[in-house]
Image (cartoon, rainbow, N blue to C red; front, side, top):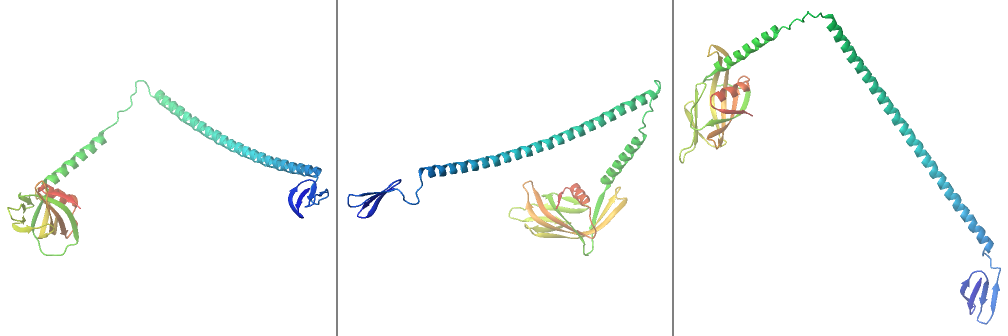
Amino acid sequence: MIFLVNEDKIIQKIPRKSIIISSTPRIFIMTDVPGELTDEEILLRAEEIRKSQEAKKAEELKKAEEIRLAEEAKKAEELRKAEEIRQAEEAKKAEELKKAEELVKAEKERKAREAKSIGPDEKKPAKSHKGLKIFGIILLLIIIFAGVVLISADVTITAGTDKSYGYDTTYNVWIPLDKELNIGGYKVIALSPSSGGSMMISLGGVTYPLEVNTVTNVPDQTGTLTIFWGKVTVMKVQYEVALTYLGNTNDNQAAFRMLISSDRQLPEFLISLFLSSSGVKVQSV
């Protein structure tokens, strides 16, 4: 190792041999500096490092090969299981096909035996439609009876007595303007406003002024439902009606919300049929 020295201070360090240059023209060569490696030791150390790196790389390659082999074994196992499932499904399908063919064959043999057992001149007895005809006649009679009942049905409305009611039914109704309606003998007229006047409604001969969202109460009434042109009474019901005026439509109709309170449950279809036949458009709410 070489040391360049100026006034007893080291100014440069050079590997290998040691040379000390002082302020005086003198050079000192030192060949025994401790801690330095010889060329042979450096080569030996480099060889050890190379071998260590090669051993590490070989170990990494070994682990990578083990991982590859494990993945290949796993993939092979999955392929084997998939093949087993496919073969099982094919076997199941073949078994089902075999059973279907056996059923078809058995059916053909049965039909052949039946055809053989019947002689050439023998004929199968014709099916009787007597039961079907009877059913058709009964159904026709029911329809005719229902038609007669609907045609002959009528409702008569008379004054009732004040009482409490346990059943409420609500409908939207539209009454034509300026047209007298006869609802079971009860006269109803929705009167369109004259110039400067207000909307009015006549119920049973009594006229009431109308404003939007105002309620007009119809006194207690008794309705009697009969069929066969009044010969048979089906039911009697006492009720009261509250009409809430909603306004007029563009097609000259007065719209109302109608609340019917009655002493018994009223069939909705019967009320709709009765009001519609009287000229009132009705919709259940």
